[in-house]
Length: 338
Image (cartoon, rainbow, N blue to C red):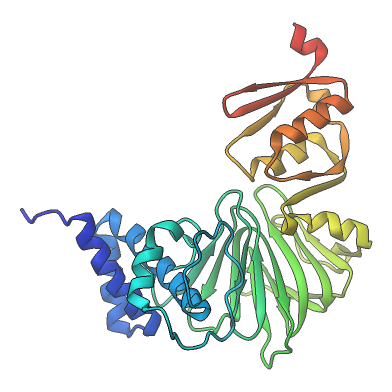
């Protein structure tokens, strides 16, 4: 029976693969990397950490030193100068452990098919794409990018994103969410695709062309979404012009408040607001009274402060809050005393 690889041996091989991936993989390299990743459950984690450290090393050599911490990944420079004062191998080793979590989403899955970008729970990520576009990911969001598309074909698997394209492109940038396809040459828009809720696309600058094909031989429906308009598409519903409506600036700010780590509500049901908070952390909020869950709420809250949110809501409706481990319970005084 062959000896089990040590953690150190796995990390060494992962570093070699990360180096090769940064320089470009051949078809044979991709096939070999896929086999290595599938050979041991520890391989993917090691490869992710190695790529994370490489990304951080590239950023560090541009600055001339390694920062001590980086709790929130910032936008990578579009053109980093050649290294002068920091040895890349030293930087790679120094940053591997500290940055594995921050860059856990920046890795290749199924090399040669797509690149996956993910944000962790409670994390907001800012990513520079090729062609001058900036991608922002909300908490617990996954985006797949076609490997051969030059960051031009994106698939929002789950969560929320905001895409800002400052430089006009020759070819459109395409984003898919379910069976909806969005195309634009320049502009900015937010897109969300969450479980059990409609797909929502909000245009803050420029124009979006939205299209939907139903079935292999079905007709293709197309609508245009202008600046300050929002498209709402329920799961399984056909794309229609009636799904596009104008949206006031105040409501746009509420919808995109997540980019600043905030949650803004303007008349939503408490039960729906609680589900939004649950996406941002391990602490779960429970509304014990169904009548209370149907109350409509208004306010701006920190996404990472569920207890503060629960306390404010309870005070507004004459309720009480009880915390037990990772569960925060909001109830009316009548239920609490029962």
